[in-house]
Length: 460
Image (cartoon, rainbow, N blue to C red; front, side, top):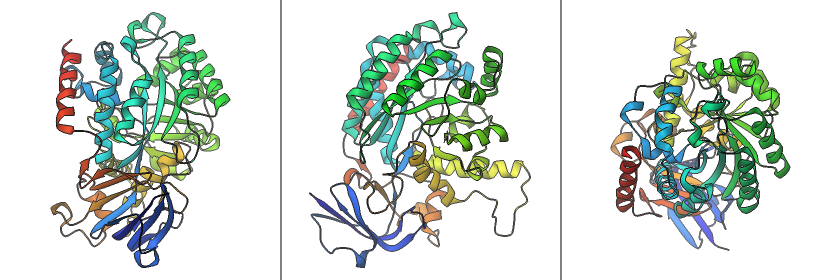
């Protein structure tokens, strides 16, 4: 069993129950799990490997709870730049219908590399269309090269335009085939054990792209195997009107009608939810993936995450797809969440105390990016730096121009100043980023392959 000693961090942010921030802090790690956390002087003096992080802030690895990796191939497509969700989707569906297995592999590694360089150690992805022989296996195999933990969602679309859905029939699948493949993937890849690097999630895409029967059957299958459930919900007012007209329910009530509430369910977005619907989330222990940049980009609205957190709802952070963001920078997304929550408070005319107690804080934003994401994904082995948990951590060098004059509070500086990349990223005690460089890929060569694939995909 190998050991790793991390020492002399300027501040080590634990995100534990006591919210400890330890000056001159460090970690002692054995075989991928944290054995000790504390001041450097209180840790063992030697290990198989040592890393001196003087001048760095060390934090738990960030957790991304919603993404569509394949969309890195369709960033900034001109016809989709100024569209709301439904128009954006109908513009891009025909392009996505040309995806190949190699496109899935290339885009997965692009998105995961971006995430890793921005501080992410665990990523959940939602792949919901499988044209031209593409499979979720293509993503899983490609992800291993980068080295992040992956929650791979077997998404699906079965309600095409001919049956009253939004997507064209060319990108939807047979429901029996979807369920068979979902079970195959769970049996082949899902690892429920502490420290697992791969978990499978069942994720019918949205109320406007799958039938109620597929939702019910997916929920039953997931619960038979003990895997999580995920879908888009209450993202736009268009979706709300679709649900009312087709099902006779608002989106949250529709989820209740198809057995899609519980502590094994999390929803992406939840922008248009009422106080009563937030209470349903709280009572049923449903989680939410908050995607502020995408919601702003598509003019979807502002999710009421402060109200959700106050009600005890688990909220995580998601960059969402790289055709609606158009990036995969998770630390920047945490800053965006903080700023958007503050803007929302101002728009609501919040009466602020002299201490700004009604302002969404840096530490709250970092908490949803770490502990919040772990709770949403149903994991208790990641999200904080504590003995017994996975050795997933990031480090940022504070001795750079971006933080000059801001070190009165290094933790706040990480988000209040414009975030850049991380200098170190370790997953289960193994380096993924060292000295600001991704280890698993030749990025220069990879970018050329990615751009070539994107050109072919978009131009046909």
